[in-house]
Structures are given as structure tokens and as C-alpha cells.
Length: 198
Ligand code: SF4
Image 1 (spheres, rainbow, N blue to C red):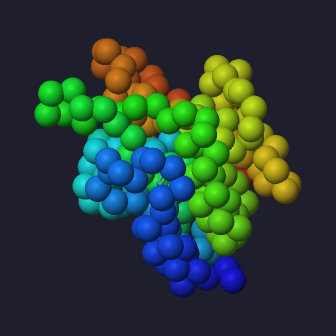
Image 2 (image 1 turned 180 degrees about the horizontal axis):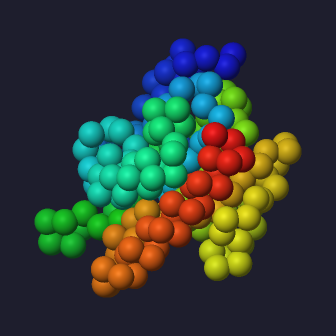
């Protein structure tokens, strides 16, 4: 059933997920969003603080960078399915702030169950992994960003993938010229995505 209704139903099922402990400290699931007719899926690692509060993927600062990069690459976000490997925000408290915490292999494996179902519904030509955690979850092997970014990757079932940076890595860069360069690299990778599947 390749329909938007199937995605809505899946998101409703995931809202009650207790497959791993991460649901306990998060506000809500943040399921993927976008049309079932999307030819491109973008997969990040997990929702962040603002995504957890709003229930929508890539709406915080990293999402704003992604939107700007998509625009510069000639891709419209509303035509793309955007999701994460994990549907709950894993974090630790530092004072009053909730800081991102890297997921472990067991959490990734358990939540892949939902990602596999999203992939089965959306009519994809290309899956773009935003960062190595997503790429490793999608390929089941260790990848390095420097060696594999921008190249097409063979995923299971004949799916085609590509690795690029997670937009949050650009935000963490210490100086403005490094951020500019990294942003230009993301736009170049997304322009290639547009050539392949746009
Ligand atoms: S992170 Fe994924 S597997 Fe774990 S409880 Fe949330 S939705 Fe379920």
C-alpha cells in the first residue's frame, strides 16, 4: 500500500512504540514526513531538542540549514521524505539543557524496524544518509565520510544510497569560513542528488 494514508497509519503506530527505552525520556515520537510519492528520502540520526518538542523532523537549526541547502541545490523539501534512524530524542541533561547523546547499536537496530517500513512505502529512487550514523544503519557497515561522501552506495534490495554530512555538523564548526565551505559541500552533494533522482 504505497499511499500517504499508509504513512499516516505507520506514524500513529510508532507513536506508541516501546521497542527500546528511549521513549521514556522523550516528549513524543518524531516520525518521518513527506509524500509517499517522494523519489528521495533523507535520513538523519535522530530528532533534536526542537524536533522532540514539536513532533516534526528537521525543524530546528539543522533543519534550517538543510532547507537552505536544498533550495540552493534546486530541490523542494515538500517533495522529499525526511526522517531519522531513531524516532525518539536520545539526550542527557547538562544543567537545564538537553544535549544530544549518540545512539547505541541496539537502539539503532530496534528502530530500524520503523525505517524499513517507511522505505517499503515511499516510492524511492535514492536514500540520502545525513551523516555516518544513518549511513551505517542503512548499509550495516562502517563508512567514513571522507572516503564515501557524494558517491552512490548500494543498499539492500537494490536500493541506491548516498552519504553526505549531517547539517548539524556544519553548525558545530568553529569558524565562519569552515562553515561556508562545509555548506557549499552539502549543496554540491544535494545537487548530485537532484541530478540522480530529482
Ligand atoms: S527510539 Fe525507535 S525503537 Fe526506540 S522506542 Fe522510540 S520509536 Fe521505538
